[in-house]
Image (cartoon, rainbow, N blue to C red):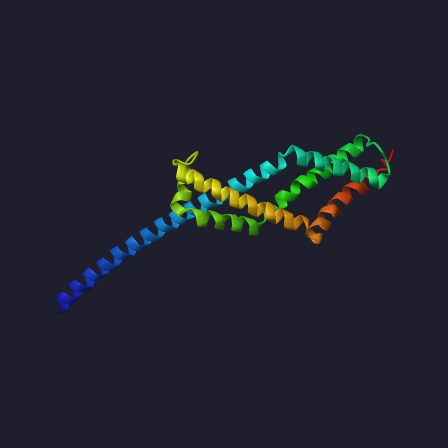
Length: 192
């Protein structure tokens, strides 16, 4: 009887060891897949947001508007009609501040989380992994879903930008940055 119990106990230990090692292997492979899938989701989200930023910042009309606004702020501050070379450099710095606004807004963790959620609503983790691993979608349905998700993320970003530029606190921070540049001009006595 003791021999049977001992043998039974050894068999149970072997079964426990086998199950434990299978469970650990499953957990590690699941974690690896999840980590890989989360990485794919992060990279896909980042790619879409960066692409949206590029579209905004490469817009020539926006750049013209920002340039005119920057020059006008300096002209108004110093009551002048034309900018000298130093003031033109300052205007370029102000344009850079304007161009950085969408970046500050769209790279906000809340927007990134919302963009990820849109992707998760449109794709399975497996599809996200496939999109990440391929240069372009393999079938028209996936391409259509990706275009739809991109459109939703772009619309969300546009709404967020509109909200932020209507936010007095956000705009005050931007204006403070611009005012620092203008004050540097004034302190250099660059008014000519």
